[in-house]
Image 1 (cartoon, rainbow, N blue to C red):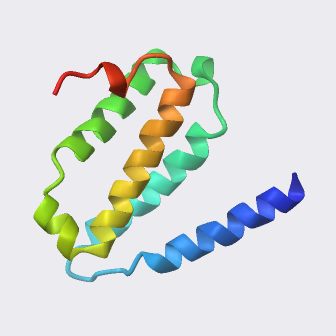
Image 2: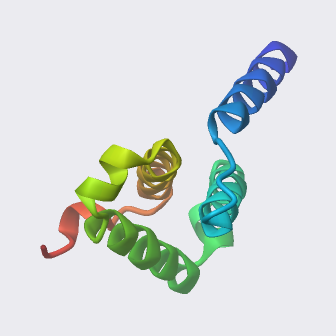
Image 3: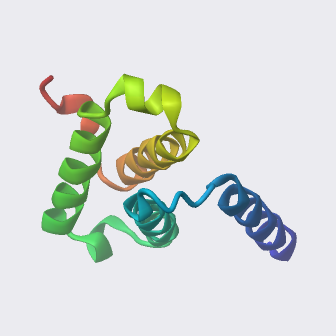
Amino acid sequence: MAARAIADILNERKSVRRMQLDSADPQLASIYILCRALAAVTGAVTRETLGDELGSKLEDIIYNSLKNADPAQLARSANRRANMELYARLIGSLSSIRSVGSSLRPD
């Protein structure tokens, strides 16, 4: 267990280094940090502690962010791609906690 925690910390440090802070758009860095925090939280909670209302709101926010992503901006920005990867991880984390979710969403 301790070895895994150490490996997770090292991987997190590597991913933070990948996020190149862009002074032109500090919002990207804020989103990245928020998503990292949410990933940690969703990995540690159960369906009961998350609650249906909060789980549903998180799914809506993340799903809409993925759905509305601009492919041209993603192609130009490593920071935006890193955020999209985290959104995808969050949807996966939420789907393991909640039985309904992104697979049932309309386009």
